[in-house]
Length: 172
Image (cartoon, rainbow, N blue to C red; front, top):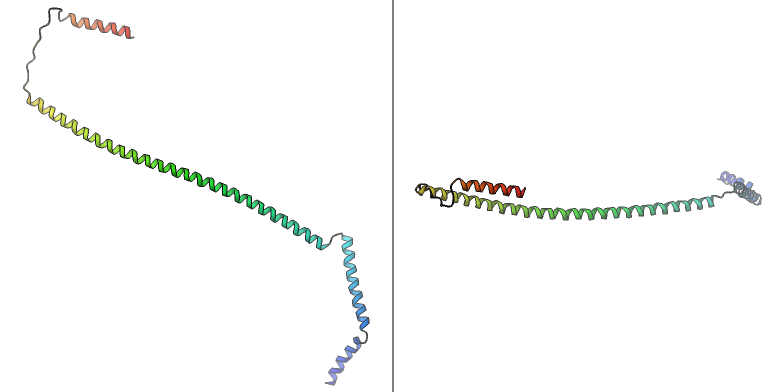
């Protein structure tokens, strides 16, 4: 064990005797690093912190702009959807009206068909009664009437024809 303690003590003894020198070297390295970073930033003119802040602000602006565009598009879609709903309701109302009119027309058609059927039956009944009435009547001989003394049989048809001609000329 003595060997282990002697090894540990020798390495500590080597550095332990000059703690001020080690601290000074560490301080010099730290100052040299800070100085080089400061010179580099001053030479390039940019600092990562300001670049990060600018990038974050640009990202926030883009995000806000994208959000506004999404809101506008959503409102447009809502308006279009509402218009479509309104048009659909109008079409449904028109369809309901057309269905009602069609039902009324079908009812009228049925009613008229029934009336035509009833009229047809009535006409058939009248024809049958007329046919049976004609069959039951005896045939009557034709009687010739005597003409009055005022005119002959030929004079009357000629008077009618001339009267018809006069009417045709005045009407035309």
